[in-house]
Length: 213
Image (cartoon, rainbow, N blue to C red):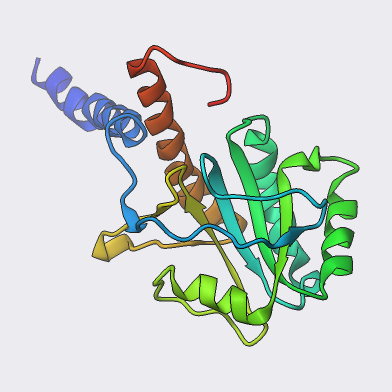
């Protein structure tokens, strides 16, 4: 009898505890707001000419800087780890802010992705250096843009234009480094699932569940 109790404590109980907490990560928590109600984009042109807005969209937001091609690996990582898995959701968009004059570089990224990816939800948007810096500053983030107005970090913005992340001091996370595939596969994917769960729960509560989320 004692042997069975010991075996239960050593092997079964840890597994049960793990499953309980693992199932709770995306079901019973919300992702904190880092910066509320950020400004929408200006009348900036996108690569495909359509108007891009943060309103009513879950947005994965990036800042490419002026040397887009040197950092193309970041976009391939993001494409593989997040985009290809969720790009079927109509309420989701990926937006990369780029300085004016980098349109040809951005087009090369799209051309490289398009043979194996439906790129309809990839949006490269172009603005002046001043506008990009001003937009970034109002996010009130700890990390800064580099000298090219870029960062390897990407950010999660919800449908109400709130920038979301982790506020706990031990694991503070305002953005996710696209240079590291493991960070996209772990921290970012976990947090992104929480955002999706929030909207699924809201839709079900309002008896308006859709296939979009």
